[in-house]
Amino acid sequence: MRRILAPVSLTALAVIYRLGLLAINAVPFNGDEAIVALMARHILQGERPTFFYGQAYLGATDAWLTAISFSIFGESVLAIRVMQIALFAVFLLTSYLIAKRVGLTEWGARVALLWLALPPTMLTLYTTATLGGYGETLVLGNIAILLADSVVRDAWCVKRKWLTLGLVAGFGLYTFPLILIYLVPIGLWLLGRKRTWIGYGLAMIGLIVGSAPWWWALIQSGGRELAELAGAGVAGTIPGATYFETLGVRLLNFCLFGASAWWGLRYPWSGVFVLPVIGVAVLAVYVGTLAYAARRPSTSPQRGSARNAKPVLWGMIGVLLITFLATPFGGDPSGRYFLPLYLPLSIFIAMLLQAIRNAKRTFVTLLLAGVIGYNVAGTALAAAVQPPGITTQFDPVTWIDHTRDQELIDFLLAQGETRGYTNYWVQTPIAFLSQERITSTAALPYHLNLGYTPRDDRYPPYTQAVAQADRAFYITTNHPALDAVIRNGLDRLGVAFKEQVIGTYQVFYGLSRKVTPEELGIGNG
Image (cartoon, rainbow, N blue to C red; front, side, top):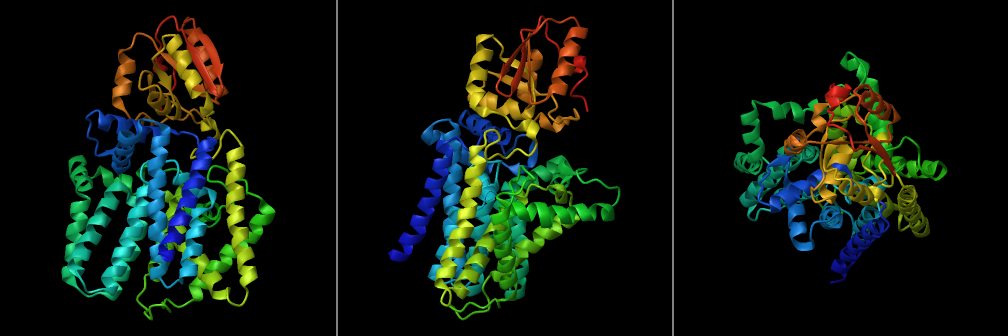
């Protein structure tokens, strides 16, 4: 009973920690999160989406889970976060089980769990707010590791476990292909431990069944989803005409920007390092941790076995590195694709501390307190700066003061403005929070160079509603150059208009006639 009490208590600590951040509005509502919320609302209204609006490679699992939360708690931002926190709780408990399976003592497993409960800011961010599947991927990936470990260790019901492993892997692939960071090393590890074609066949059957919606969409689209899976949506983000010209950027994004966000040394949305003096000491701890874990044998002292899944943990790091080097995803410096690597990092930290605990108990306690204290301090500093707060937005143009959202909604309704043009990061939150009384099309650019991609306009019914409306507003955020284009364009067309500033929102309303972005020469490419 005492063994159960410790992980449950640490999980409760993590839940309380996140609820505290929500109580102070530290994590702003974002456009991708609003897409999930709108999908969940539409599910409760009878819609049956299979994929994320506008991203056909990302399954609708997160929206269906959010719909369940809405049916229990009502439609609100808090209900979205409650589901994400619940997923994180499952991730913590399964991480604890994995820590035990790879050879940590009870004390070591609790240390890994404590570090995950109060982690670097990036893990806190993406397990509190949702972008459509990160939380589910962390849970399904952990379950896949536990199933694979069970297949290797046990003979009881092994065929059923192979099939279940395949089903979990397939469903995870449908939910978010990021789970390949788990599946590739798991598959290689199993090939090196088990010689059973029946088992592999059952796992493949399960994988096909679990990911059936993805395969059906792949057939219907003529293979378009394969391009999305390979990073077509982020292609062109790395400057350079040839692969070798981009290799340096890929390595920099992995080793410097990605790793620093993973370790909490910087925020995903900023290049500024957090508490750099202390951060140097924390960096030394993490580098030492990885060096120690690389040298330590893969045996499990507690179980006397060399078959534990520690190689899978290193394989996850290797697969992500290869992904950065071989695909367009290497152009992403945010660090968000490092999220699965918090599992191996937490276990490796616990391994190091467990190894030196008997000889240097006080030092280990201070070291653990210092690392976790740095995590919490970094998160608190981010929460104190609003905007952006603890945000998923990388571009400062999209750092929106969402505390003024209701004020904006009330103003638009009072003016009779319910249809209009804006950018993606305004469109979906305002639609959800206004109960879709205010809908807009994401036809405006938000990049400072006025670059625009039609991919931003992800929900055709809103576009159709705006096209059919007799009048339309314009809303921009943090974009003086775009504001000037709109003003000059309206003046050139002889259209009278009014302006209102609400926080970071610039509202153009009361137009004497409806004007489309095409007439203003914006949002076309």
